Image (tube, rainbow, N blue to C red; front, side, top):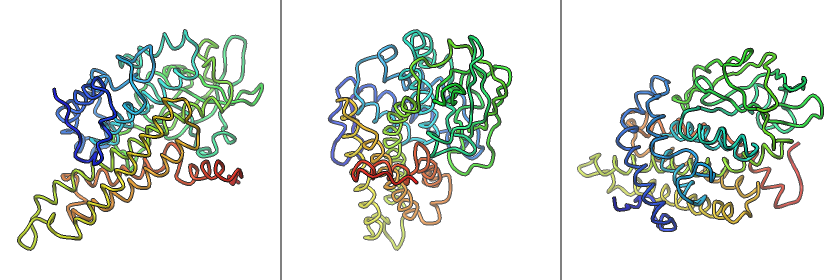
Length: 392
């Protein structure tokens, strides 16, 4: 299968990928277009997760690309960003499932687990034998997770006892394990635990009524004297700094996903503009419609450039928190503007699922907020450029 660049990659950034990476993207793109895209509107409207897509995603290698134990070939962070983009270009909920399974659950073990834990869990998460979730956010602790975490882990011999609650945990209604982050009662430091969801005292309840990422099964989790053996404590997670190392990786990929959402809306709007006739000609011939489309492709191109560079910095091991924070803040803000312009191109049809833009428009709000709000990421960058922390 010959490689075909996306028309929305206006400056040809995909040319930076290797031939092997391009081949992978084409195979994944084909599976997404034929096996997943046709069903997403139906399941989005029902607010249900289409479990059959799990097999499609794992079969086509969307999970485990970032670690040597599970990567099918050596690849770059730029390539992994394009994978996130391709997923979100079809649907943001699909991208979020992969982000949780791959970036958060598998990533937490890959970054903070011992070699034995990596060898045990990474292949199972990659194949889909085990579905994972990531429990950091709490009902009263989101942006201030470093200080405001209320879930407590108490040492009891060779076990740990977990008590607390989590909120907005993706995949959690059907996950086999959840990575739970809790403060140690002994030293007050944040530690991570691999918690099998069948453990006594662990309950997950679906959050209803969402109007964004409706396919994603977010849950409230309650932990009541959940007993976890020391062997399931992430051996290299000893403070929130280690948790932040996981988030640094996923934050950059959320920026890539935001570009994918913008592209999905832009492509739908461009197709519509070419087909929709008003005043005797396609609306693509109207100047104001072209203005919306040009501003959209400009913001998409700028976001791809920023994401490409931040991923190159990750490959070169020079990426810092402020770099991924700027990428996430910028790309999600431009995404939000782009989906709004694209909805405007469609007029009244922009609020109908049939034309896809309405789904991208609604889902953009979730990406704008999760993995660090624009305000929090702004403060991370602001601290880096001024030397002054303005968080409180």
